[in-house]
Length: 195
Image (cartoon, rainbow, N blue to C red; front, top):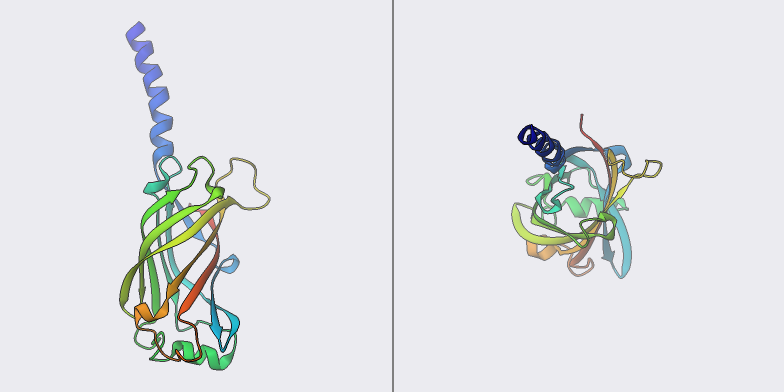
């Protein structure tokens, strides 16, 4: 009888752990998310956006480092704040939208500062592909419950992601005399647990 009770206790302990250890898939709320970027044009800061065309996000809350992010944005529908800047952004010497219509980021490692509190932030290492050139980058990220959700409810999350990239590292060198090489990424993303 003791052996049976021990077996039941083991199963009751093990099953919840096995269930919670799996990654949870999330779907991007595109209408409530923004992939933003900040650039300097003739000494003045400007902001642009690009729509997301695909986002595969899986979060493992028990082992955050096992989480994955794979996001593609639409270069052809990018907006740089001003019509002439938008056209220059899509030009062959910058993002070359005709030949490279998407930018893709694939995570390779995710590190949380405090795995018990993801809102304290962490880092996402990954591969960023722009103009067909792939380079490693590290972005800063934090995860929060969306406003209005109950404590412990992880069905709706908000991400804040930022970092900097050198556009010339990807061959996007056009207009270098008036546009800064450093581009700051400023991404606000909202996701819901996939059904």
